[in-house]
Image (cartoon, rainbow, N blue to C red):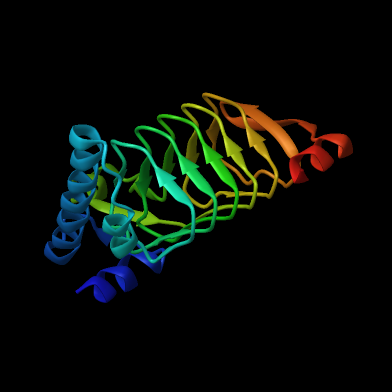
Length: 195
């Protein structure tokens, strides 16, 4: 069933978000996220294996704080040395990839799905999804929201509270709503990042 839902959601075409199979896979992901969060919140026990079994890929040294939620899990690929702070939400209705050495602040959302613009289709639960790619050594500040179809290049910093609606290149500092490049990261800054 998981592969059928993945084929449906990842092709980028409109689909029924309340389809029985879609809803079943989503409910499983929600249950696993709740189980993970419960252990962290009630026993201070981090069980990465719960999420590793849910995700497509999870690298080494990945730390995910409590109140993490995702849509399906099977579209999430995480690299190595990643820190996801509290209240992270990933709507992985298409591929969501996060590279190595990435820091994510609290209350950040990666939203791969969007509802239909047409009100009739929207009332009929029609959605479509596009992938999100976060490059190596990216830092997403607190409260950042990344929308579907966005790629953020390596080493880039996204300022707190930004809404990222379009691709952001590598090696820049960007912020705002909509998020825009403020300045490049200076060469000295990049050398310090490597240390």
